[in-house]
Length: 469
Image (tube, rainbow, N blue to C red; front, side, top):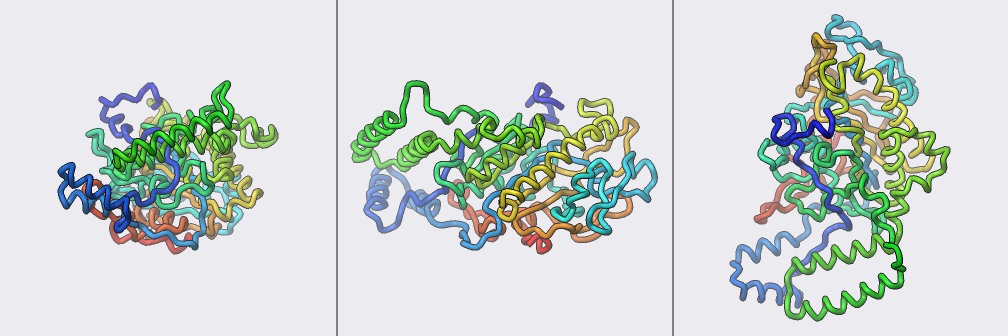
């Protein structure tokens, strides 16, 4: 698959409609406060406009505190490395060397730095630092399909629908982080996506609201500097004049939409004036030896940018190398099968992930940064006639590192064919509960859907994964 292959009319392409490039900024706050003069005026004017009592109550509910934020957290930031297309568990982190050839595939396992843990021979750098990684081999992906919605939202109810309304309105984890945690540094976005195709590989805010959509980080470079001929003082003066006019206007119009718009504009001013965003996205400010260390590839550049964004104060970063890059059906499709398609990709992937982990650790950032590596599902246990593997939702493997995650462990197991979960079944909700808990967000809290309905952040009988705490 490629970007040019994307056609919303195709069954395979319709699910890639989700996501957008709206920016997310600071955490939300109450816009209407019960008992305040402003709330009284807004309520009174709303009543004059003919709004019903349920509508007034809905507005008040939306402004009320929702999920609780704890001062105790293990992660200040999350980097989600999205392996678009669905990586093969049988050819990466869950090899079955004793299985028949048509199941085990062409790759051999190698021993890692942790006794008893073996992974693919083409991931030697991950093998050498396995003490930093936890492998989950029993992630249930039956709720997922060929879309980022389910696992980026970490919610089994967030599904591909083929009606241009993917996700059912449930927000991504990045959008939840942007709303309830916000950025770690004022003037930075809370949620940034690094992907060549936002529509195909990034899921956004759903019904949580455009305010919490991810900033399109690929297009952001060079967009947050001062326009030519405009100085900081001039922009500040114009901002002050605009706010004076807005104050006069608000005496006649108390619309909460206007208040939101004013806040959006002010945040945009802050992002430009501080210069922090522009600096964070400028890879030229990175020493050449560091750029060389990451490598001049899409994966390398995005990994380096993800590290810079963590340093600059972004809370949640989702990065994807290329749309469908891990969709190895066989040699008849663009990305090829296991030998011709996956094999040449693995060294670059191996280098990128381990370089990022090492760099975060050297800078003292790994202890406060949760790194997740996953796709939408696994691959089928039987090699096809064209040396590929089909989509497989019963199980997938993934990696976790940083933010207090004990490395050097394998969580869960599959059967001898690598196609079914044998022990420690985990699902999207367990992943979401883990991420929220790491960020200090109560995983059993809720958000408010349009219409005023409280909706759980985590669905079903889910809980933080104990082995990752």
